Image (cartoon, rainbow, N blue to C red):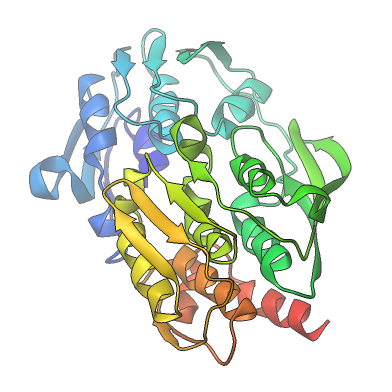
Length: 334
């Protein structure tokens, strides 16, 4: 919805974007305000901050904008709108975020210039290209953690995209002591993106403190990393991750509450969580809270837990990973 809003802001017709109950609670003011500064007419619920959004676009002017949060979705939205502006669009980021849009636009002939945290897009006409889409590292993260925390595992995930602006989960797991138990094999480049096969085997993990610039490049992987922290020695701390509170669920509160049901020693913080390793979780009934990443994180926890884990709302995984449960069955039956 955020990316389409940027595209439609440059079109001289009326569009209305809406979504399911979860999407209608997601904050849209972060894109609406800069798009309005560019000249788009946008209306929405709750002071133009929630969907449905009514967009009448066209005649966009260039802006120089200080982004309040490091968000690839906001950045991509404004870049797509900037393609239709009458001059260069300049974005100042508080920290780097995933850069798939910059890479894709450059491959299609756009003039995209980066200078530290400043990004400049000069309007241009894009050309069509063929694209090889690598495997999503956010989805691969569940299998990485499963392989590392299970006492008898070896999992290979093929064709994983390792864009440096997305690969924070690899760095975090290495900080936790994964070492040679998390290996990259067959490294190559596909469609301008670095790709490799990732092999994860049983490991002994240690606690870490995680915050700062690494958080925006692995924000979606923090729930499953919390599962890994449950099996690590010592106290793990996540900070600077308040963005978790405005995902499909409040992922700080829901991750804490559901892992506690399984016996985790975990507490919420305003901008993160504290996890003290317990080495063992116990299967029980847990809830997805309508959140696909939480459902899959709880599945990984269930793989390494003693007893049976029942996830209510398990179908939510299909939002981003329709074959998740099929793949889970394949690795447990292997």
